[in-house]
Length: 144
Image 1 (spheres, one colour):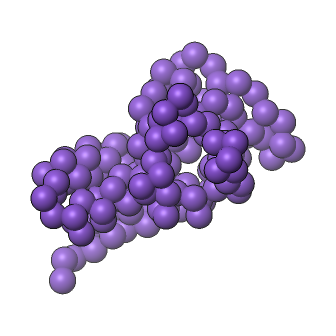
Image 2 (image 1 turned 180 degrees about the vertical axis):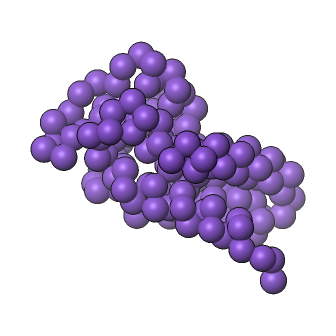
């Protein structure tokens, strides 16, 4: 798991750079934004599992700005929610912020529940981890 987390962190950095470089190339920028969201969702899952192996989902909420998101609670298999510890919040700082309305097509399918009106989503840890593995597999595949 640690190797995946390191690889996803590197992939996230590369996708952010690709997103910034592709400012004049809308198609490439959109693709980088989707991969950025998948990497971020997977890293949220990795960070939470490192702290609590019983976490199966995480609540992600909108901030004051509708495109500002933050992880606010860990959810167990029984559905019990707990606020994130300071250390978890510190490590997650910024990752959930990469989950925007513009790249929702990439991360909404990774959620158990999406409440656009209330600004609360429940990110499924297993789906997020699978998305991360998919990102790493695409990056490892030979270019065509």
